[in-house]
Length: 287
Image (spheres, rainbow, N blue to C red):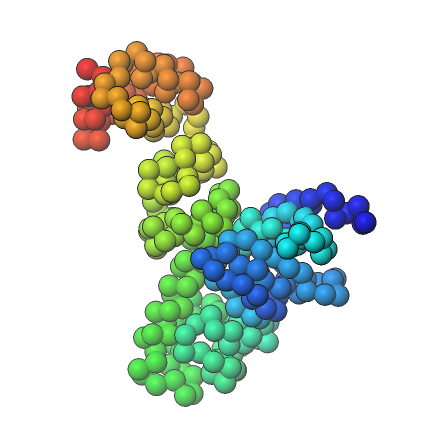
């Protein structure tokens, strides 16, 4: 047997693979099995995993691991187990036309897609991003069509930008989708302002993942914000174990141990938490 099928091949953002979706073989609960035509390969590749919505003709880029396809108990070549997947758009006129006609925007089919591209050329996507109302200049678009098309376009591009931001900061497609489902268009702002909130709000994201995201966003390891998040995590763990009181000394020690910082940093964070609204829980627990 070919030895290359025995060793998984990992793909990172630096050597991601891209191609065109030729078929969606299975789609249930976000988990998909798709066929992708990859440049340089004579046959479409099989990709599987949790992915955002995809359509035939869509250009996508993925990271993940190539491994032996052993579904149904038989080795059948390689399959890409996807970690992250983002949509790509060919900026040529033909590429934009295919993209718009793929069903990406409700109400835009092949004929209308061609007319839009004939009107705006390679600037089509920029115009839709910056001045979507200009779609009224395209023949065949009635006043009633303008609002739903522009609204759908704006929402799609916004969510795509949020997904890209989340994936670039180390999240898998599965977790990024959960965050978008939870916060919608506010997702990026929530993550940037308080990444540790994810550990509380999102099933599947624990403190370690939220902390890793915070580091990717540039939060200093010795920041009081990080120490405060560790305090709340330890208190939450104590409450989950049935405790209603935690000695201050124990709380500081365990929190410092969790994020590997000096206890003095945690002490300062604890003082700050006890002085504000959310800190009332801390004040009751440690005084």
